[in-house]
Image 1 (cartoon, helix red, strand yellow):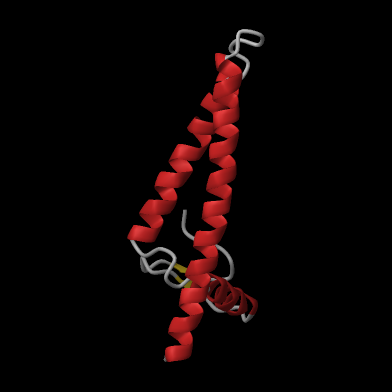
Image 2 (cartoon, rainbow, N blue to C red):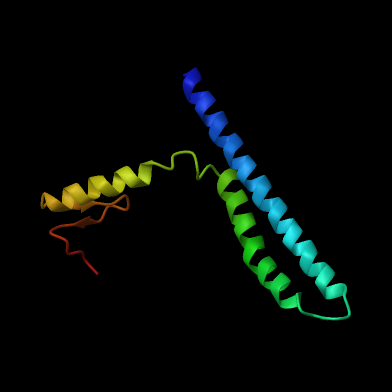
Length: 111
């Protein structure tokens, strides 16, 4: 059990390190754009780039934090194995039962 917790700590530490490095690079680039906007030579050059960064990155950040807070990353290997199980069931010709209760027989489902 200890080995599993050590592995988890290593993974979390690595993820934090990657996020810190990426965040520092992002902050540096944003400050560079802000300085570009402030200069009179190329006024407004970075405005579009900053807005695109913010529009793209803020939702991703909030979605990632939401996924972490709700435990979506606890068992990231399960969907892979479930997909392989479903593929085996389909190849054997058996029906695939879904959690909602619908059964698909022979690859055809009720629509």
